[in-house]
Image 1 (tube, rainbow, N blue to C red):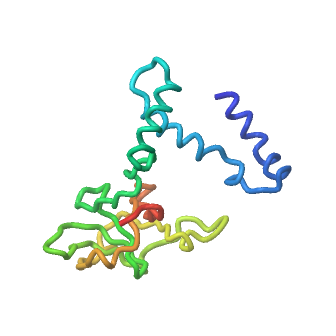
Image 2: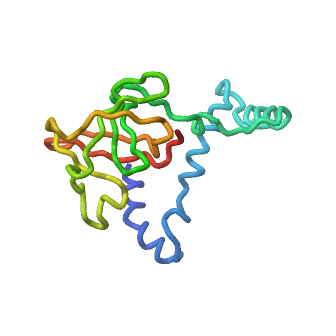
Amino acid sequence: MVYNIHSLLHIFDDAVFFKCSLDQISSFPFENYLQTVKRLLRSPSNPIVQVVKRIQEFEAAKCPLTSTAAKQPMKLTTKVRDSLVLLKNGKYAEIVSEKDDVLVCEIYRRSLLQLFFTEPCSSDLLDIFFTPGRPGNTVAGEISRADILHKALKLPYATGYVLMPLAHQVL
């Protein structure tokens, strides 16, 4: 913990010295890949041998080593955590029920959404908004899956909610 905090003190200097962005000097992709390597292990003995054998097995089977779970389409349900979406028209909708290929939703009135922050840029540039937690902020409507741009997230904040898209999610 102390080393991590100490490293954060120097991260700005490193970015300036190497004349690059933090993304270009980040070790996150490598650290993230370690979980894939870790899943290749079956026992604590001889980890290097196990990893090499598993990689050879994947190559022989012509299968990608990385998991395809991250590429799976996101599920949309009426459960709170899976029900909010950002529509292509810029409005947010919360799925209430599904009938046939139509999603019955409560659609947030764009005119009643407020900016969540203005610095360093306006939150509407990122489609992030605050909505007060009072009745009348939504109107009932029906949408199709083709109307959906991104799955979204609704987080409680103060006396309402923050709505934000999950831009990296595939529908």
